[in-house]
Amino acid sequence: MSRWDADVAVVGLGAWGAAALWQLAARGVDVVGFERYHRPGHALGSSYGGSRMFRVTCLEHPGLVPLARRSLELWRGLESEAGRQLLFPAGGLLIGPEQGLVVGGTLRAARTHGIEVRSMRPAELRERFPRHTGVPSHHRAVWEPSAGLLRAEDSLRAAADLARRAGARVFTDSRVHAVEPVPGGVELQTSERVTRVRRVVITVGSWLRSLVDGLPLTTLRMPLTWFRPAAPHGDAFDLEHFPVFMRETDEGPVLWGNGREGGHDVKLGLEGYGPGARTLDADDDADRAVRPEDWTDIARMLPGLLPGLTELPAKIAVSLFTRTPDGQFVVGALDDDSRIVVGGGCNAHGFKHATGVGEALADLATGRAPRVDLRFLSPDRFGRTAATTPVRMEGAL
Ligand SMILES: Cc1cc2nc3c(=O)[nH]c(=O)nc-3n(C[C@H](O)[C@H](O)[C@H](O)COP(=O)(O)OP(=O)(O)OC[C@H]3O[C@@H](n4cnc5c(N)ncnc54)[C@H](O)[C@@H]3O)c2cc1C
Image (cartoon, rainbow, N blue to C red):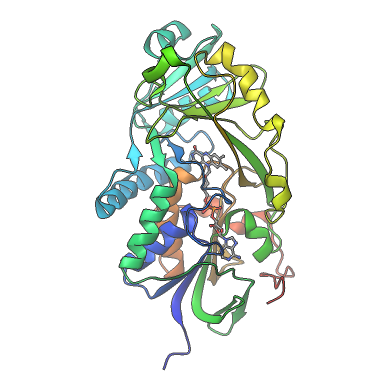
């Protein structure tokens, strides 16, 4: 009898963990998944909210473009295996000052990697996408035809279901309290069981600090709002007329969102800088309560930028994401120890890459070099010292 309960464990089944589980199970790896809540795709982590923007023009880092391209192939593969559409490629708009974060970064990524985009002046934007108003003359809009909308929870559940079908064992309501290296592998502890595996993939999103010490991570709350079109504007806010967008203002905040799709209203948010985006402890339920400042700033912007939506949101939710000092993800083996592979630090732009990151995590957990070079995302770049305890024991077992 083997001393190992499985070859690999995946701890945390959000978008990234579910994708890693799917990739591992599809390769025939004996894999077990742990999710602390009742069902993958719950409302408490980073993957909630119905939809996420997909784009290839990764303005956050040039090294992410190959990852987005690979992710796109894998999203198509996931759709085909799951037998349903998860990515709606209606195109996307990046709007803002010509040299700004959003438009400047998008054009740079497009030029460097030969991505098809089209730059528009405000007048042309208004003609093609009349819901966007008040764009100053020194701003530009970049149209990326390859962009689109991913169905969030649906995608990660599809990956988790396919993993199960391929033989992965999944424990829900199973919070891993500790990951402890043992000779040749690691031991995972939940309140119900101790599980011994050769390697572990830790993808616990905003809870990463509670399992791994020494990474410079900050968890932020990010409000999400859904608005309805006022009666005469009906279809004008459907996804095909009002595609996914990011819109940088001269004042600083970046408004992002997407049109109605799959029964959801128009979704809007403010990139990281809204007054509702405060740091918090992912286990502090009190901070998840909705407050007026979670939606009032956006509501104030609407008459000038997106007229035709009702003044009050139809729905508000609070989501979480994790920030790193350089804005880049954390993907790689911890302290060069191939037994412990970490995927986190999403910086609120990681959903589109979930399938590519899942594949890379599966590669790392099975001793292969990832197909896309992700060494720039290594957890070691933050200079964790060998003296740092690699994994933390925490909570009562
Ligand atoms: C409001 C918002 C908007 C965003 N918009 C975009 C976008 O448009 N495009 C884009 O590409 N990205 C976007 N992102 C980022 C994207 O959503 C995240 O990168 C992605 O969802 C990260 O998923 P994750 O698997 O890392 O984390 P999560 O989805 O939070 O998953 C972590 C999982 O681990 C589980 N877990 C935690 N601790 C334990 C434990 N000890 N034991 C077992 N299980 C545990 C949790 O319950 C959870 O299910 C956005 C993020 C937010 C918050």
